[in-house]
Length: 380
Image 1 (cartoon, helix red, strand yellow):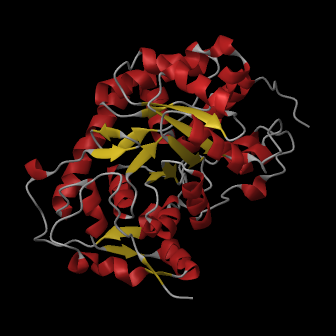
Image 2: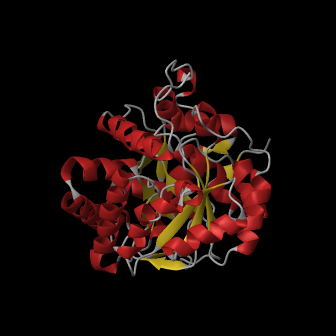
């Protein structure tokens, strides 16, 4: 049995504490380490010619990076959101709210989310709700933040392990479709760390969503967090559940039906470049940025984000990628567990090592209608 306080505010504070504990002791295995760029010594271009801007969910972003949804619903998490909003405003990065379920249950905590807009009045802000939310509730969340887009998160594994979590999931697809058809902002569906399979991405496209954030294994492990909150800790065998972010991108990027975003296990600007090279439109970071904020403060987070943006442009320069989409023509070597996953999923990894030879002289324009296959599947 669970004996700790089960209010949403206490739970949100627990999530922050346990997530930061994970990121202070990062896992040794991360599938991004199995994605290596092939270095071509004459491929480099002028740094001044690199344009990192991207279009995502109807907005033009200054770079293919965003601060992903984290928290809200308590006094402490409201302060964290305020500081994250300041960092977003200072750097120009889009930012997503954490799950707004607490606000939908108790309007008294509205300000713990509203600060994302108050302190970032001209930025791109995403509202965030779960897939049990009604269209009316989704509109309330959007209105509170004057949001530019809506995230709907999928987290069945987390809910099952969570002592007070939901247990009914059969209606989620219908709710997503209804919300996407009703709200007047783009809808992005994301996993919270267990990954989106190829079949799921295809289904989301059918449901009318604007983009999918694959939210793969490798970052914050919410099965582990919720298990730590249980007195019996009986779900330890579910820690590490799901597909990694690189595996999700490799499996689904060639579908080309909706843009993919990449979150889960992004540790550095190099991981951002790797995610883009695997077909992501942009990469989201949550736990790594939260840990910097809590350990070193807002100024340190702003400096870190600016460094990431600067380093990403430098990496693109070396690789000869004038735009983020150009990274999908860079040669990659896929090794270790990534290569093993591809072999099992029927993805021909050999193609990735010779993409530059097969690419067109100019990359397609970076807009919502352009599609560039990330790989080829081996016929069954």
